Length: 317
Image (cartoon, rainbow, N blue to C red; front, side, top):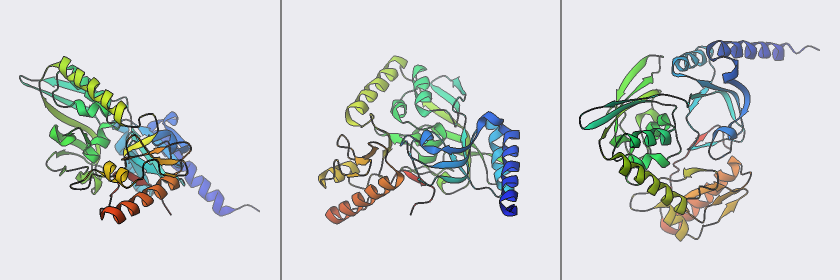
């Protein structure tokens, strides 16, 4: 017997797919795409639709999802995400990584406008080669520029807020707005973008000028330190926990005797206990189970609650 509900549902799905393709072209829309392919954790179930868009297409895809009542999620490089094993119902949207940088040399500063989809590491290296001083820390952060703004990413004493001037973003009504760094309320691993529905298209930065050779040398030096101290040989989402006031999360975990603790394929790195790594076919459930064990043990031993730095996307049970 013909299932009319299923047939109608397929027709609606096909209609929505056709509308997506009309905006971004067929080769930029993938159905039932495993998000493990798009996160640095190499974990995550399928998205109904995975869409890559350029800045001109981005607002149109958002508008389509809103008008059709389709759930949507915007990601960058997937470097700070744990995606549910069940995947994502709706659209996962990512800006093109092959974005542009425009540099504007001034008398004693270097300003730049960079697309939100570009890898932060690439931007930092390009900026250093032009003498941007103090931004070397960003070259080892594996996120996109938009994601770095969203999280106010930082390392080795530097943060995005130290150099960000403003962003252009798509607002809740589809309007393009400019938000200053002050309006973003940037603080430790936080921006207002985590609470308000604005999606960054590009960002303006300003740097003091230094010596390009020296800045590139600093990037190499920090890269060597990362290779020595961080488990870069395994998939991970970077630092799993935020730094508690007055403590270091990695040291608390190490002192609690949790180095090497494992749940399934997820493991506390012995090299740096602040990292949970995918040691082979880890599931999101494995990671969540390990996070819970770490939090419980550290709370019990030191009365400190470790708040996660990584973002959870999807449904977790």
